[in-house]
Image 1: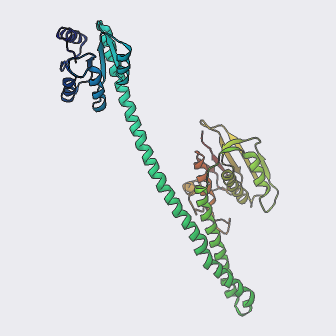
Image 2 (image 1 turned 180 degrees about the horizontal axis):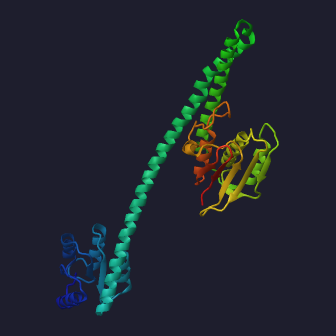
Image 3 (image 1 turned 90 degrees about the vertical axis):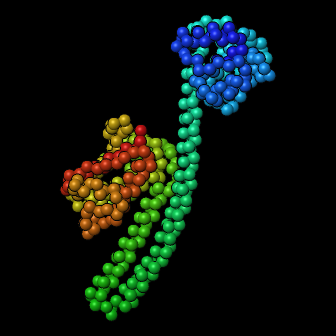
Length: 365
């Protein structure tokens, strides 16, 4: 308590005791109030506005606000405009006009304590947000640096690896064209193996670049007609053959059209590829209700896969079929998974080996 009238201070102390508060100190000047708060660290200060000495209670409260985190409730017998303006400027958490009753005092103190606790919580949250923002900015700088390194790596892959690869392919082509007569059948076979390997290596380089592109490209959200995309993709698949194609119409989603075209293209081209040995291929693209978000699927009646190896499906360069049965480098599903993740979704698969597969995915909520 900061009160310079002894009788008022004594009466106020009795009232506070009856209300269940403990008075840890009573002083009568602004300087004593500032020193007392520093020494005793009270939960709340009851501050008389008019005090003896060169500084009044408003000046003392302003000093406390600058240096101490303690709520102040003013006690005042008058409230002229000038004094009210000074009181507001100090940012008090409550005030009581003398003479007051015990319930009024208790209400003002409890509201002040509650507001102070809320202010503390707000400051802690602001500090946490500031800390998280700084961490995010730091991680963003690290990510930008990593992206620059990735760009440099991609350039190295496209240039430094392709150059000798082109040379190998070029010289082997010259041998095949000009000197094949001087080679034995086994030599021709080895030479063709070299050419096939360089071609496969070039495809691997392309796949690496595509995998990096999916994670680096800017995300541009828009309404996308997946049904129309699926129709375009199916129409461009080769070689042409008779197949039963089912595409559910008017499937509209929110996402990046270029990325979704890549993802859906990989799923549909896989379905096309793995139904290549089926008498009547069946491929379906559709939608089903899910837990909080629609589930989109590509289903086929092709070769399928062993569910015991399903955990390898979405790994880069993972293949579940022999290369002589089905071509490919095992990168397509890894690309699809990254695109789905960038859309806030997930992807999974079900299959009965020899009887087809279903790839299902969501695109976030």
